[in-house]
Image 1 (cartoon, rainbow over the protein chains, first blue to last red):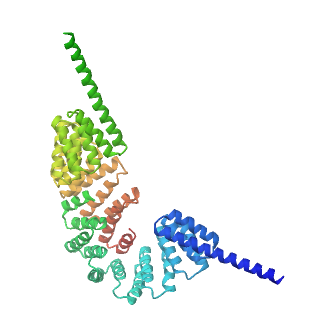
Image 2 (image 1 turned 90 degrees about the vertical axis):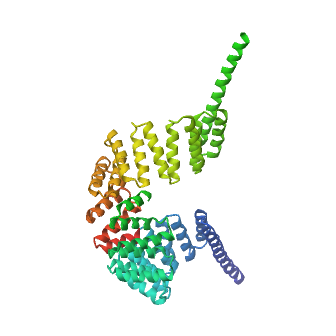
Length: 253
Length: 252
């Protein structure tokens, strides 16, 4: 009787282990396909992995990432939520959730999800930046500034956070402080085209159209086909009364 | 006498057959061209030209195929080949304009466009095209008269009215430009370019609130077009609505 019980226990254990191993194996295959951007096939493997073992939060996150890549945002939200239900501290799930909401332009939920990230790992500057960026997208620029300051407390030369903080300053009509921050970014990375472009906007806010024009031109030297800087340049020309040049540009956009 | 008559008949039959073969190769080329198989179409057009170097259509079609392959210099030569044989071939002049424009040589493009309007002055499209090439060259004043000729032919020609508005805007006549853009909007309320340009003209006049509205109208027509959104950021910044402007800016 004892040996029958033992054999039964052994059989159950083996089945469980096999299921888990197979689940991981399919998950790994899916990750490989995902890296190769073969999303639909990757999805098949994640499905197989979850059929074998539906309690693996990583597989749910990978499934969510794949659905997001396939623009099935609602599907991806469900998958990330499954992962969170299994492990509430799964940062990759919260991050994916924030990105999926952001893709749906639901910035309120996106920043609510991003808020969890620095709680899970407060020493991760990227999480503070993500929270700050999504708060900005929601229109909460002052709230964003405090998150960005937390990122900068971890790394004072964190150029992405400096850049985003400059945007918050611009929203608060503090264009002078924005220009200072953007100059810091440019000193750290002269090829940071977004900083040159934002500097142009901040200078425009001050009515310095010639200086703004130069900033846009610097952005365009880095990326001559960047539409945003081209349109901004057109506005600086228009505001300077150089309408002919502005229309020249408009015709080429 | 009989032999002479017979050889004459044979000569006529042979000529007709050769001409038919040329048209056949040209037709085959056009079929490949329509299927976007440009290298194959070029083989057929070359065969047609080889059969009859005076077959103007084949030269034009060859130029079109070369242009589709972005071999603009070669296409210029082919269109030139057509024009050497028939100087008033409108498709050849038309192709020439497009090839020069693709090479950003708007001076030559507008010269070719001028020739086209000379050949076909009753076609409004020719005047519009000549005007457009002049605009691309920066000759806004000269372009105006071409648009006027197009509008003379068709007073409801919205593309010409829109382009005339742009010329006026470039020349600093914002109110004249606005008048043209308004006309276009009345004719076609879905003409997004006119709303966008109207916004720019209003902005040039310092009427930022109205400009903001015009950009909003543009977005209602095409929500995926980013230009009016960026334009709106500028109008909002000018109105000191910085919070709104920056929210738009970070989500674009």
